[in-house]
Length: 489
Image (tube, rainbow, N blue to C red; front, side, top):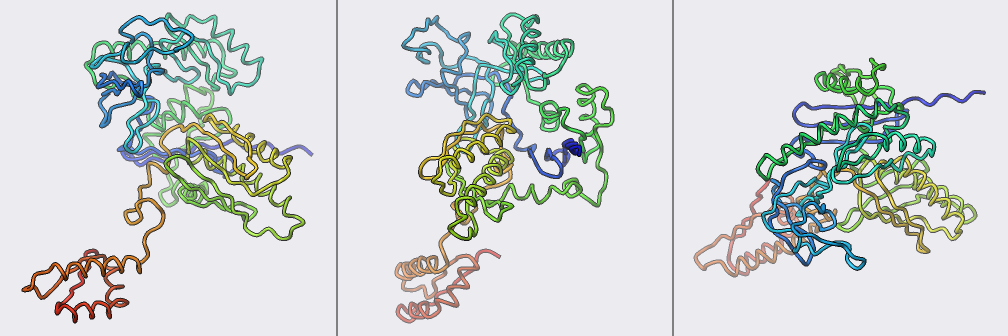
């Protein structure tokens, strides 16, 4: 019996004109990737600026660069290209990089690219090693290199691409890295993309030498354009867009990549059924914002974020009987490994992640779970470094963040719990309120007969109902009238 052919994936682009762009990639109704960008929170990662060094910190071996943003960017010495050194420096075996205070100076102008978005109170992470991404190449000015993406695993294809690129006239002081989209491309197609990137670099360099700092000299494309450039492959069968203008722009880009697939872009024009509902993705997208994820076996994943790391706990649900505990633990852990890799990708969780697996004493079972996790991460565009399960059942991994996650751009800390996820209960709040009222009565003047205490409606009702006797005692003891005023609706 012949195997059923795997259906091609769909790229879905939902647009609120002038406000927001969402991109989802689904395979047979399963959400595989999700990206969101709001216009007022537009990404700066990938943008190139002409900046000016504001100050240099020798203790951090870093410079803070004014590139026009609210906060200065952070530029470490290892991200400073030698062409910006004010003095000649000959590296030796002991020190790879020179002291930053000896090769850079305050108010020095420098071209920098945003490598990592600013977060919280931290400014953006910058680099003077620039890169310009195209469809099949990444151009690297200042680094004469000929590289192939590590995700091109076929050795024959790597050799073919290497031979083509090394025989190209890339240009003095320029290097290239072939992206995965370059696989199978002809020499003509590769040369066309390289010519475009070289023209783009010429324009960036011209702006960098003529405009006054701080100024933006190259802006990365918006999400809809980046999605087509970076994610449109042979595996994508259709692109659905719910905005006509965006669909026209996407069609033009798609035609350059796949000239023969003229009908790949389709417009979703049904006003009664939103795009996400049409393809059954709404519930999956909403789950991205939840703390818990339910597994098919009945287990649950719980995601908790801290400043230093993300912790993922696996709750097994009910595992019946001692005899099948080992097999059930293995099954749930393997299931969790696949889902965790998927959720980290969808949520774009970066940095250190610690997973608390259900305890497995059999090292063979631990190896199976580690293998399942690594296999699942092969689908991830981000770089990952996966460790091993410790004797305590913990596994550490590090994942590269690709951009601002859907969680980061759409959530904020709760005004009541300040982001802790918990808040003081009403009884504790009432005790503090009574203490405040007690001090207010003591401080009130002898002529004042009424003491006013303002609080939330919820706490006001609790005080008037559950603490009425104590309030009456205060009024009787001090001869005052206590008035509880609710401030909110």
